[in-house]
Every structure is written in C-alpha cells, then in structure tokens.
Image (cartoon, rainbow, N blue to C red):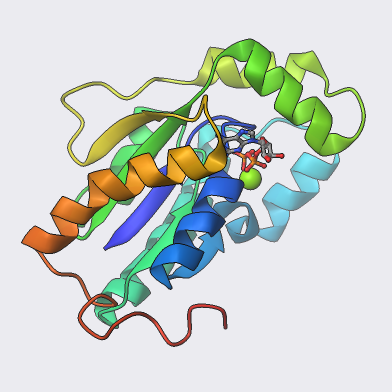
Length: 185
Ligand SMILES: Nc1ncnc2c1ncn2[C@@H]1O[C@H](COP(=O)(O)OP(=O)(O)O)[C@@H](O)[C@H]1O
Ligand SMILES: [Mg+2]
C-alpha cells in the first residue's frame, strides 16, 4: 500500500506521516521535496504556484509511488493534495494507493503553525490554503477524511484502524516480508 497523508499546512501531515512510517516500518517521503527547481525558485521569490507549475511536481510524486509499487514495497508519503484534481492524479489507476486527509479547525491550525515556526505565522498564508482547499467528497475513491484535532498519537491510531482492514483484505508488499528493510534509508 502507498499511504498518502494529505491536508493543509499544520494539519499534521509530516508529524503523523513520519509516525506511521515508523510504526509500520515503511519508507517515508515528503512531497515538499519533489518540486522541480523552477518551482523552488518561484516559492523563494514569493510567487504563488499555478496549477501548471504543480503538474510536474505531482508527476514526480506519482513516479516515486510507481517505483515503490513496481518494487512491491509499501510507503507513506505526505502531500497537501488540496484539490480534487491533484488527488485524482495521485490516486487514479493506482489501486495500491489510498489517502487520509487530515483536518483541524482554523484556530488549531494557526496555533500549530505559530508554534512550529517559533514566530508569528502569517495568517494570510493559512487563509490562502483554506480558501484553496477542496475538502474530499464522499464519492472520492480511496480517500478518508480524518480529524487531527487530538494528539498525533491518537491521529496515527485512527489512521491505522482505517488502513489495517484494507491491508488484510489485499496484503500489500512490505507487510508480507515483515516490512521494508530500507524504511529508514
Ligand atoms: N494531532 C496532531 N497531529 C499532527 N500534528 C499535531 C497534532 N497536534 C499538534 N500537532 C503539531 O502541529 C504542528 C504541525 O504539524 P506538521 O506535521 O508540521 O504539519 P504539516 O506537515 O501538515 O504542515 C507540529 O508541530 C505538531 O507537533
Ligand atoms: Mg509538512
């Protein structure tokens, strides 16, 4: 299984994703690291990314997922996946992939981001994300909305409870071999 942990900034993707990868002994990747150089340059200059900028990024994430699937290995990857079109790129045609979309209320997100950055987090940035987000709809295959309002541990437990039955029904690689020996490579 490729588990994609999605949600806006501060929803807990990196924290919960890394925790899950550790618990499952699956390799972990953060989608932030898949941006092409042109996107990084734009972001550094404070220029918002367009959808056109995001396609090569999503394709790079998808290629990483496909490599893992082809190798018969499970993995956890974080990706904001704010829009349905982005989620579709990642999930369509990949039955081994599934997504949990983390949610928390605005005050909680603002508090976490402020604490994480050690200084005031520009409220505007969170506002932009909350305006852009398309919350997953019930007809979206393989996507489950999960609250991260409680602790990271509780959130991880809730996710494990969701993915375990799916793994048991269709044992993925990584499980059959007792894990991924490259998990922390
Ligand atoms: N239930 C929770 N799940 C995840 N993170 C939480 C939770 N509660 C508080 N946090 C804190 O929120 C902060 C932001 O989490 P992070 O994983 O960086 O979010 P993201 O990767 O989605 O931007 C972290 O400092 C984390 O410790
Ligand atoms: Mg993160």
